Structures are given as C-alpha cells and as structure tokens.
Length: 122
Length: 106
Image (cartoon, rainbow over all chains, first blue to last red; front, top):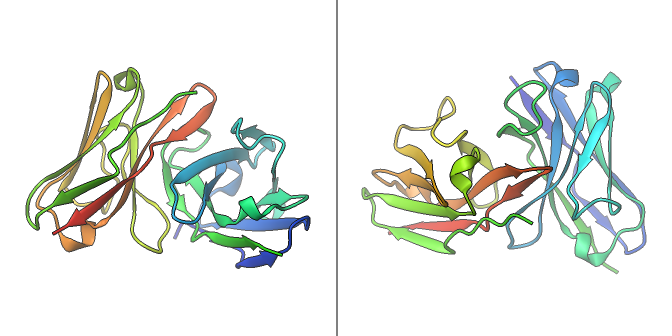
C-alpha cells in the first residue's frame, strides 16, 4: 500500500525551531516528488513547495520561499519541513502529498499524509 | 499571481445534482484537479486533469473545463459528499488552489 506517514503534533513557542517529517512507503520514493501544503485553522489549502528525493531539487512557492526549508533524506524515505524561528502565524496543519505520476511535479496530488498539527503559542 | 475563485458554499438536496465552479483567467487552457476534504480529514483527489476519476471515486463525480470556468459535478448527492472541495491548477512556477467550496447536503 502506498502511504505517507507524518510525524506527530507539535506545540512550540514563538522563536523556537521545528522540523516535521513525512515518510513514504509502498512505492519508489526517490522517483516521485513530495510536496507540502499548509492549512491554517478554518482556512483553505496553500501550496508551500515540493522536493524531488532523487536529487533534492526543490521548488518553493513564492509565498513561502525564505520562510521554511524543505529537505529530504532518501536513505530513509523521508521528507522534511523545517522552521528556524516559528511565529504564532505558523499555527496550522501541514500536509505532505505525492503527485500521481513519477517525475512530474505538476501532476495531481493523489497520495496525502494525515497531516501534522503545529501549534505555536507563548 | 493567478487566482482561482470558487463559491463559498453550495447546497444540494439529497439525491440531486451539485455543481461547483472554479473561475480563473483562461482556466480552460490549464489542467484542473479537484480535491475533496471531509471534516477532520486530509484532502482526497476526486478528479484529475479536468475529467478523470481516480480508482475508487464514484462515477457520480465528473468534471469539465472550458474558457474561464472549470466545474465539478456531483450527481445523486449523498450525505457522505458533504465536504469542502478545492480546485487546483499549476500556474507557471507554482501550484495554485482555489478558495474552496463547502457543499451542504440537505
């Protein structure tokens, strides 16, 4: 079964750093891009960026460039989303998702992780 | 930046047809994907590349795309179809999601 498993909920203070993960299984991890999507409380879906595990090629949404870091460790089939200094406005659910075609970062997202809830509060 | 506009909500009687629109400049020239998000769950792909249904998605779900409007149609609406629906395209260098539509099944 193809699936993405995400790390658990986090509660952090403003200014702290954080790295959440997304582990793929059931498919050739290195050949499918992995993307990240933010959903703030009660709001819609926002595209953050995407990474290709094969060579770590990364494309950021202009809205998130410079605010987060997307990385991958293909040896453990895991992608990461990282903040160096969290803000209260980073409070959201973060989903990882995989396109439905190998090697195509513009393809539809047919496999989604369950989401990681990140709460940033003093 | 490219924007996709959806109605905030659509109401449909049980067993009837719901149509959810997604407006964008010349969206007919782009590939549109649609996602369903039930409360408390991750999104799920229901239509890809305008008209295609992934395996496991009921035939009641269909899509179309022309000119400045893409449409997701839900026929014979069921209680389980009550959810938020998002259209999505790729615009040049980034993926863009629509504003989302809440479908209420009455």
